[in-house]
Image (cartoon, rainbow, N blue to C red; front, side, top):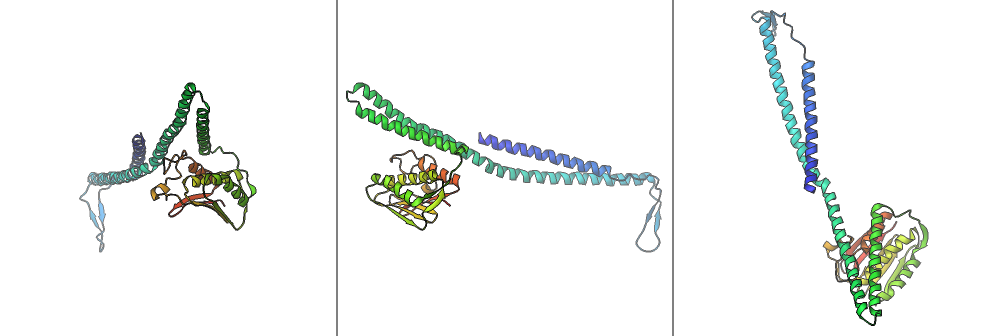
Length: 319
């Protein structure tokens, strides 16, 4: 499909270039002929100036011979002009073809990449939704044959919650892609206090103490919902992958959330914000959290990145 699109771009461009060159060449030939002075046939002698002495009058040529000579010169000139125009045209065609062939690759590549990402997105979304639905179906069948239904009801409730969250995340990403997130409302917030509350909310999910440090100012003018959503996503990620250490640092206009889990490989760091991408498929989650965090940051003009060596650290610059 994309090869056909690339070929169409090349063909259309070359046809347009050829048409322009033919029009330009035809115009040059027409005006060259139209503006050429007509020969005067009443010439029966030619004055030849040898550069010194008296001019010599040559009467060997009659008017018809002179006309033929001029005609031959013009025909030779026309041939040279046509040859020059053809040479220039062919050179331009080759140059345009090389440029179009190169840039058609560049033009089609983003479209092809977006198309492949969309296909992968649909496949992954279908797979992620299929899992909780299959579990729900299995538990519903178990409820029909079991006397004690509470266990199966709990399982159904868990999977329904999981599927609902996945659908909400997909809807949020779809709205962000369409630019329909509504007007951003900024307000003055005590970010240090808000971070403290978020850390306390996530503390039960982590066996060790989550360290929080706030340096410099703590109050900022920000869209509260967006900044806290990013913080929640990064804290949730840290509690999943951290082992014994999680640290949260607020300094000036930057938040850093680090954990001591398994280091993220360089090749994974480049894809870690892709939708449905997970470095460890065995962990709980859909792989949409970091993609949403990046989308929220981009919509607000913030910057987010990941570094991983001894610690895996996510940094957000929000001003």
